[in-house]
Amino acid sequence: MATTSQACLGGMRRRCIVLDIEGTTTPMTFATEVLFPYARDNIRKHLTATFDTQQTKDDIELLRAQVEIDLEQGGVVGALPIAPDEAGKERVIHSLVANVEAMIDADRKVTSQK
Picture (cartoon, rainbow, N blue to C red):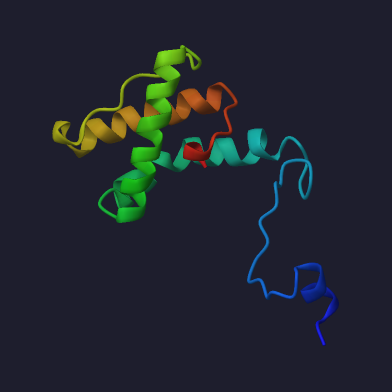
């Protein structure tokens, strides 16, 4: 017999449930008052420490794609092209940080930023 939680999930066991936290489990201001300042304060350190990992490389590609869209549409003040890998780690990180900060300033909440 399925438990109540299993019945609600179509009889399948789940390991986690992802919620949209803003306004659901936390105040609406959580992203702007907690998450964005944390990201701004730690993005450079995080990128420097994890730059060569596959997960960070994948995240960089997502950010590159988003920034290309932003530049084409003129949607984010301060957006600038992300330096190619050939430019070196420091230049890539510098351009990534600039774009993440521009997204924060624009109150963006896009997948590549998360």
